[in-house]
Image (cartoon, rainbow, N blue to C red; front, side):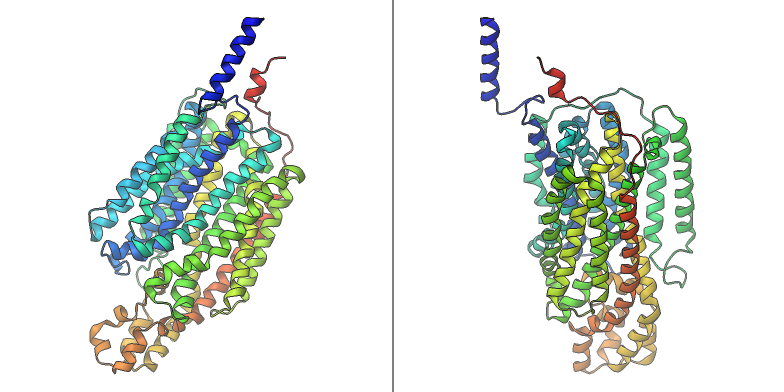
Length: 584
């Protein structure tokens, strides 16, 4: 007896002296939560930090993104990271179930950190510089996918059911907040040096990598299994081709304002859809699928993922529209120089982040006590109300009304995020949590890529009706010859949309030095100044905004209904590590 007491005391002294704690320690769950939240945050910040920094990046590598041959670089810079994360998170979540979630997660932190260093050292300019950034962003996205695919599963393994909603809520809030924080952080850092948007990852990544390797432990169920190679191949290629086809569909083709009649776009859409159908057939027949379709028999899991997809599309569309609205129209109209618009767009979007951060943790905590479904549904209803409020605003709005509306949208997103994650992760058996976490992240990341194609297409369609006449009459009023004004007016509106998105005034480039040089100096100054282009496109932009936000309202309300779906049976609960090792 004395020997047992002595050895127990010695073990306790060693645990107190050790800076790292074991998986059976009561505080381990907080270590797991804090590290995975850091990993999720840094991965999602990088999905949006480039979004608002694109003007500085293209200036830094000396590439004009509005030249016809350079639009593809712009699109891949926008969607490359999000596309890869959408494709890989399911496979990497499944690998976490097989090889160990912590092992895959830790490797992701390391890859993410190393690629951040390489991205910041881009030695090339022009097209070569753009290809360097696109290629290494793709590899960085592999690391980000490893983090996102396994973080929720690690948390679910570490926390008991009574605290799981709170813990997943904190992680989920960090994930979605990262997409908002990236907008603010990108605006601030791009003002200093475009390379700093990658430098900022390095110290955080080093800390997180060392911390993860030293402190995280495998506590979940590892089930040796074979990798579903055919499922991975058909899913990865099919989703990549489909999303790329949707994104390229917004580029003009053959005299049309968009490229939906382009044979390559049609081949991508049809071929991608066919591969995904083949993927579903394969997954229904293999013994150990990467994407367990049987999980969708649970209505709570299916509804939660449907809500996550719709919410992600609406949230992604909101980010794009707000950036265009602020950088291309509102800020120049209020005297801000085009070079400064990314910084101030980030600052003026702070209420969106504040609303999300204020509501997210509270909703996660309360959903553990009162149930997740009502909070998730209420969040989408609040988001729908905020979209309606933004729809009623004039293009040249009062900022405080705008700030309240985006704050309200952030609150709605915060109310939804944690409960939705809790619904999804608590509706699957323990051995499927890695796959479920990856599937959840896939729907969210695919929604962000889909929002580029869906909302840009709707905006281009809205602009096509009124922009040509507005451009023609506005240019003619400044003395531009009718033939030149008509030529500019009949150009595809996607160029004008990208110019507004990047915070550019494209009039000098569209007219050319010869036409511009023939005009009086006063007219030249007006055409190339801060006020002319924003005033010119504000009316057509609002026409497109009506279409975009109306769809966002519909998506939010459908997502609210999907969030209320209940499962008929509860999944079997995994034993807690402390319970397994406890002695009477």
